Every structure is written in C-alpha cells, then in structure tokens.
Image (tube, rainbow over all chains, first blue to last red; front, top):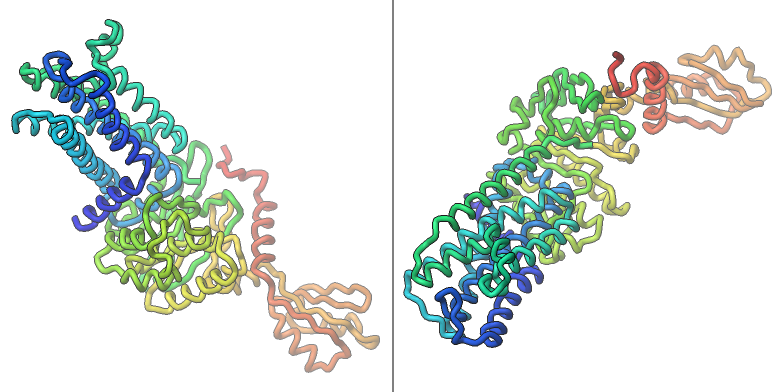
Length: 249
Length: 310
C-alpha cells in the first residue's frame, strides 16, 4: 500500500511538472471560461440554465477530457515502447499497480481541476447553486472523467509515443467541439446535434446541465458513458494482454 | 551450493523459429555467469525467460525454487535491461525511492546514490542525465532491493572507461558477499573474461559451450608459445617437447600450439635450447568465442538454420 501511494504521488508530480498539463487542463478551460462568459453575456439562458453556470460545467468537462487524453496517452505509449513497462514487470510489485496508480493520480488531478473551475465560477462569475447541485455536478464530472482516462490509456496502447500525442490532441478538440463543450449544441445546426448524441463529452456535461435545469438525471447519459467506459477499457486490456507476450528479441 | 536458476529442457518458439532450443542448465548461487553469443543467439530471450517476462513454450524454469512468472521469485531480483527509456519528469532520487518501495528491506537511498556516484545529481530530472549516468542510475535501481541475484543485460553500454572500471570493481565486491549471483550478457569479451567464473556460449538457441573462461580457451585451442630458434635447433628437438599439438615454422620463427603453454615454456628453458624472443599466449576469450561459434556453424550450419529440420 505504501508503495502504491508513493507511485501515485510520483504520477501526480509528473503531471504537475508538465507544462502541457497546465496549459490544456487549467489555463485553456479557465481562459475560455472567462472569455466566453463575457463574449456571450451573463444574462443568456441555455436549455434552462444561465450561461455562466452552463459554461462552467462545459469547461470543467473540457478540462477533464484534456487531463485524461493529454496526460496519459503519450506517457503510456512511451513507457510501453521504451522498455519501462518491461522493467517494471521484473520487480516484485503487482502488475496492476502500474495502471491503477496512473488512474488514481488522474482522478486526483480531475478533482483539482474541477475545483479550480468551480471556484472560478463561484468567486469571479458569481455562480450560485444549492450544495447538493454543486456536489452532484462535481462528482459526475470527476467520475465521468474515467471514460477519458480509459480512452487516454487506449490511445497509448494503439500508437507510438509521437503518434499518440497527435491522436490524443485531435480527439480532445474534436470530441470537445462536437460534444458542445465549446459552443452549446442547441445553437448549432441540427446535424451537429445529431453527432453530439454519440459523444461521451456531450453526455457527461449533459448530466449536470439537466440537473441544473431542474430536469433530474437522464438515464441515457449514464448508459452511454458506461458503454464507452466498458468499450475503451475492454480494448485497452485486450491490447495490453495481446502485446505482453510479443517477441522480446 | 544452492541453485539460483535452473532450466530444464526449456524451449521458446516463435512460429517456426526456435529462439531457445531445449536448454538445460543450472546456475549455482554465488557464481558470476556470462552469457555470450552472436546477435540473435537467444541470449536476450533466455534472460527474458529467467526474468518471467517471457513464458517458455515448454520446459521448466525455477529461480530459487520458484516460478519466475510469479512475483515471489522476483523479490530476489535486481535487473538492468538494455535500452530502457527512463520516465520523464521524475528526479534521480525519486526514481531510486520508487524502486526501493517495491522491496521489504531495501538499501538506503544515500547508499544507492553513492554506489552509482549520483549523489550530487539526486534532484536532477532523470532523463536529462548523460547516457552513462543513466546506466549508473539504472544500476542503483537494480540494487535497490539488495538483490540475491543480479541480471545485467549489456550493462556498460554508454559508460566511459573510468565508469566501466568502477562498475566492475563494485560488482566484484558485491559478488564476494555470500551467495550473490550475477548473470550478465556483454559484447565486451574482455569484461566477461575478467569477471565471470563461468561462461555459457549460446548459438541458435542452444548452449554450445559451458565452462570456466580457462576451460573455454583450452577447448578453443588457441594457446601458443612462439620464439626465434637459433641455427642449431632442429625440427626434431621441437617436436620432442611435451604438450605440443602443432608446430609451425616460418623461417627461423617457431610457433607451437599447445594446451599448456607453461609446460612447453618450462621444457624449452630446461632443455637449454638456443632460442630467444619468447611470446606466450594463454589464448584470448575472443578467439575462443570466434572459433567456438564458427566451429558450430561448420558442423550443422546447413541442417540447422535456427529452425528444426522437418
């Protein structure tokens, strides 16, 4: 357990020392948040939610997607292809520690990242919600982040370290835009609304948006996220096992 | 003596290529074993099997009586692999602590950093070290659990001469402690020669020679005594010396191939022959290695092509 916690700490530190992490997971979402709240105007209401609250959820989700994809994919790919994973397998630690510490560290980062966005919303843009709503929005965003952690790991198993960085960046922007995190889906053409329905990004933010509009939790959102989580995880596990006995020349 | 590693009829096959082909051997605890062989001979696969990274197609492998695929066996291991990219954004001291956390009774961080001569660099990011420094760091990581058995796959690649010397000096000290075992592969045969007390030569997945450095040199038959012979020395006088396998005359220069250069030299001097300019060679491991692998090639090169005959 001590070893597990220590490894978790190192995984955290590695993210915090990484400038990409600060840029994509903190600076970009917070910057976008302030910028668009003022460009669009505080009085606007989207799907029954006022704009500063709506966009706070959008950007918290956007940050969580970035942490999972950008933080994990290239690192997993690098460590897998450069012999690090192999070296870890020669030590007496549990094989699962390698991936569980990465996941745990990323969940912790997601918590920090969501907290920063929510503090920015509450303190600067005067977002007000009930305690239950704050908690629910935070918990769904953080847990929903697991889908993108799984996707980040999957990308890391599919491509080499340079390619996976590019793939992760493309997925990051594409899924965020089509999921309505940059601009609300209801302001987009109908074809975009149709595409959004298939995006885990849209469904993740939609849980909180719905709750804040007083509509309760939509079961579809949960199902879609669960299916994505299972598919991404299953594929990643399959690839990791298939490669484990590959030729060691 | 206890057995550190045992191989019983171990086979590793990739499709129809036999990377390891029916190898049986035992490595005693407390020995320093060098695994030599040309590229693609199966050394790395054999090490991977010992490490539990690769599951053999058939046969049985044990490390201190336990299956290396299980975690228990690996508590005793310290490992340095070839070409490992260290993780980014982690400091030298942190990596050492990271590895210490895997073991029940690790060596102290300071002792490990001193051992690798990296104490002044403890706060530096590991990937920013030079190639040789990274190798030394990997050695400290391998030593973290105070291992009973140390696996070194090409350990000195990238080290400069003085680091290399210090590294082997350290290993010799390590091996002197009771029952410490070292298994290494290296391209520098002189390194194997100075440190190993047993050499396994692999070729095409099999062990083609196994013995002390001395025995291998004898087996390869490249030991000789040579000198310049004076006018009065005849061919019969030379042929009558003990332990002479072959004599080659080039003008007045004589080269005697022998199993025992010492005895030939002694006999020449005791017989008070008119000779000068002695040159004595106990053989080089490198020559032994070349002749052993070449001999094996000649014997079955056409039949055995890394594949089994159909």
